Amino acid sequence: MAYTTIDDPEAYFQSVLWTGNGSNPRTITLGGDTNLQPDIIWYKCRSHAVPNILYDSVRGFGNDKEVSTNDGLAQGAQSSETDGFITAVTSDGFTLAAGGSGGDHYTNEGSRTFIAWCWKESADAGFDIVSYTGNGTDDTDISHSLSAVPHVIIVKNRAEAYGWNVYHHKNTSAPETDVLSLDTNAATYDTANSWSDEAPTSSVFTLGAGNGVNKNTNTMIAYLFTGKQGFSKFGGYTGNGSADGPYIHLGFKPAFIMTKRTDSTNQWIMLNNKMSTENDGTGDELYGDLNVAQNSFTDGGQDFLSNGFKCRGTNASINYNGGTYVYMAFAESPFVNSNGVPNNAK
Image (tube, rainbow, N blue to C red; front, top):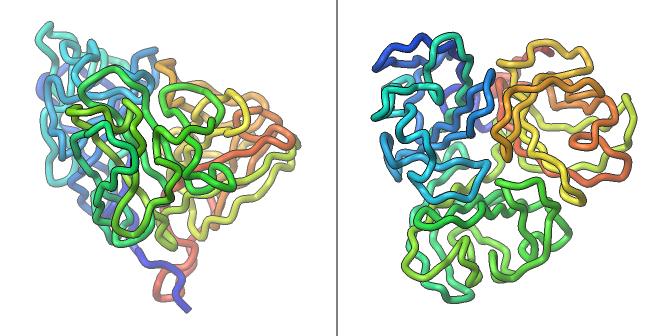
């Protein structure tokens, strides 16, 4: 019996915490047992209200290369370009530098706390980064290298201020007709402008004529994910509004979960095993669509278990009675590795 396709999740996903010390430059080393040279770095100041910042190896690192998930600004339009940024990746982490103004409150100001989530691009791990130029034409096919059908597609117009478009294969019964916005708390909505009402395939994803995904001559960036047994899963569930909330089977102990309610206006909730270390019915959270500091659930969170996660409490962002949700989850360890050895619960 095949339990997992990836025995070592740290080869493809890791997160890291650090506290600012004001030094410039500063190298952040990932803490896993396996080295990971990241292709995408999504980081956030936990202690203060500053934006979510994202870099990738296709667009490059440094000044004017950042985008923020909590707004629709074009690449490089964040004030972070003068307040600290990531200048390069290393064989096991990345290098921080202060910006032109000498500030570093986005990355390394003394006593501030930070987190970064890092992914390695690999078809084996179900992750692909695609850069393309829009043509403004409906029913445009864009090739990808997953060699599998994408479960999640996240697209940003790099050239102009348009919001983030998200395809999730469990969004609705016909997900190719609908779209979520990563930079807002909006419910899912029906439009042909994003995916041209066509489901992605193992070789292409299809675009409508919308400015956010396909404006003529504008450069775009797309992040594509497909689930890999024992490492990642992109699914959905329905809330029950109870402290004894639904259990979601993953096939692995999660390291990172991002959840979005699709039928109503609720935040993109991000929980991880670095910030929340106990299953105590609460949970420390950040938001993909907001620039606020780290918060803590007071009415339930998600318990991280050896084979999935369980919702707790009645918080509408996680477990509203009858609410519909999608999630993205990545593993700390597979439930059982390829040698038949099980992991341990949190």
